[in-house]
Image 1 (tube, rainbow, N blue to C red):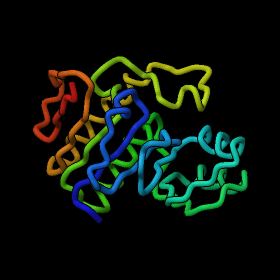
Image 2 (image 1 turned 180 degrees about the horizontal axis):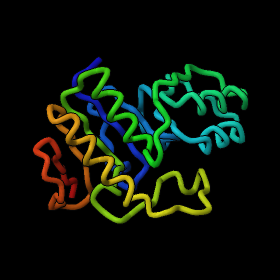
Image 3 (image 1 turned 90 degrees about the vertical axis):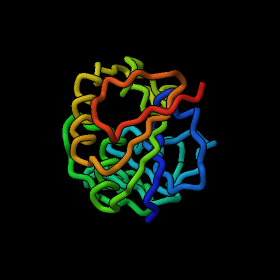
Image 4 (image 1 turned 180 degrees about the vertical axis):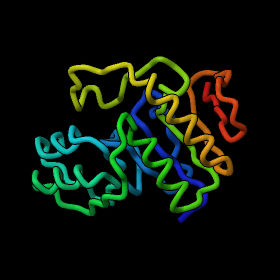
Length: 181
């Protein structure tokens, strides 16, 4: 496993993604222009979309046991790997960061499309693909989880790619913001 990886979330900043030849994890159903090596899926909405659109993943899918079971019950073939333990209010990016830091000892993670880390923007590039009828303010849950991850893996540099200059509210030395303005 590479010591430097990309994780691509679903926020507006995912449009900034540059592959850079790195191992890439994409969250949920990524835009078609993103090349990726594995998927991170933690809820059933992407599975239902796959079934409706006759779409099968062609790469390994990191998921929870319940997501794997749902995929199989909906006839979604593929390499479903239940490596995540179900944790309330985590997103697929949280799971991927934790998994790769714990199991692969990555030194650097480039994070694209995680706008909710540094803005109040919870929109998703998937909003037109997977309709969410309600979206609670998840930042109140997600940001403390990010802080815990930053603190838990101080030797992993986490670089958030943004479309604006950011004055980080995060105190951890391993958290960086790279502006693409």
